[in-house]
Image (tube, rainbow, N blue to C red; front, side):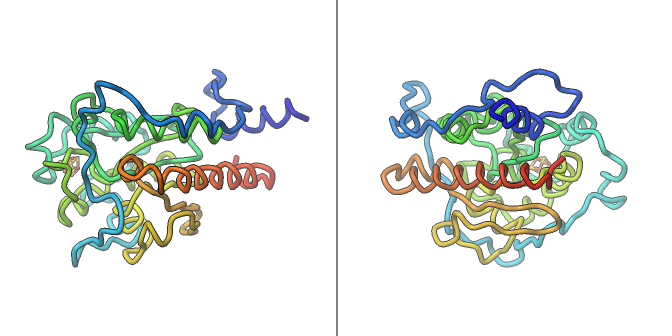
Length: 269
Ligand code: SF4
């Protein structure tokens, strides 16, 4: 039975085209390591600022889900390949953020992931490396994933905007509007069964503009065949570990439980 559960967990994250086993398969939650704290001497220099919670989008920025489904008017029609989409996004100059960024942070992970994580936008480390969530916040996200039995390469991690906003500010409404088709196209191609909303911007943009992370974290929402889980942005947790780390870990345990339920009910392929 145990082997069967491991195989089922494996099939949840891997397509038949991906034979490699995940290092996290069958892994038990590891809360102790998680609560030891994040201590990277280099990355400590990273400034963890940003509107990660309880900020409300300015008027006009509220975006009901799929407000800009990629179509003929914005040039994304017919793209069903993540690599092709990446090439298109790398060329993007649809908003002013591109001018101040080193490059586009497209997102990364399993193109067949059943779980997708959506943050706000790239920070300095992400802008330098071209990868999402690789600074201190990324280290915490990795630990949260590990503690709930996932491996980073099993999931897909992306942001609402693909270019770094200056000074870690909240992306402006036109920037969110301009970049959202990219995320929508990623969701359309990857077809995740669950999306974890990291912080206020993704929660308010993808589910409901009235959501508040401190009030609504841990809650599940269902829209258009996708389950959404609201939780803290890892950077917000790093600024208040005493009060936010354990609740975020509990949210990840809820994520694990929900996935296992879906797997048992055969509601995921
Ligand atoms: S943030 Fe998005 S819309 Fe703006 S330039 Fe970058 S990729 Fe294009």
